[in-house]
Length: 177
Length: 191
Image 1 (tube, one colour):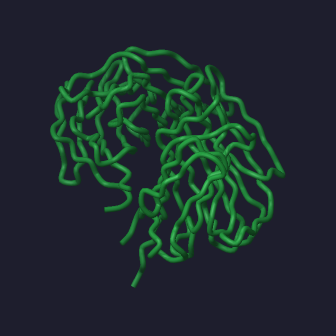
Image 2 (tube, one colour):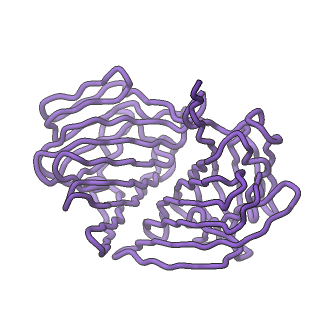
């Protein structure tokens, strides 16, 4: 086994209409405000990439929290640094969060995220880097680097909107060594 | 087989080996290098004609005694190297992003790191073993002193082929610890 390996969740839970594990090991979701992917981080791999795509009912931050072995999300130790490029100017901000990482901002129905997680299963703090495109003003780069300072082993991840709902697909892949 | 493939010596070229000037390095398997407190980490036979493009994933990356830049330079097993690097840097640390350009450098930037909280990053390397200039794109999350977006785009002026790479801070006394994994992007064969 080499390269990228799909990590099919042990189970998923959502708050909203529905979320379904599909035949490819990803999860399709409709009109949800929260989605838990349990069991996607294992001792097999150190680093992961998550591909998240879809749309929102109205403008929304998409945020993420780490989930422990009991399926409980952790709510401390998250720090974000974002950069936001619209037209020709870039802006940025760093903030400490308790509601998880605000790793992207979605608008309309054409948004995509590639989220890299370094060491989520390892009993050390986790680093995260997401590369995003969203439909604000047609197309926008909203990128994010984050850290989670809690030195613990995480088994899953919760995605949520700060407001409104999202519809789309998510797949988690491990970097096989 | 198509897609992302871990570098193996059977891919072509010689068997991968790794050395360092200080610290310790362990080849966990072909393509996976664990390094501890290393300065000047050399990875031989990382690249070959088996792949055009490569991805290096840096995980659990920390540095001593403080924050450092895990720089990179193309090499060959026979020690040959030439050309220079041009770099575009983009960093966001607490506020708006800042940018800088460096030209005519002897190294380019890999992934920035800090002493306590692990950093991580991806480095895409386009065409190192091809007889053309090489391009690099680093996408990183530096975790210290506080989390930063730390990205670099670099080009190398030489059209020579390269099979190896050297990594480390340009300043002596700064070491790095972590594990890196080297993948090649496999093209699909059309019959």
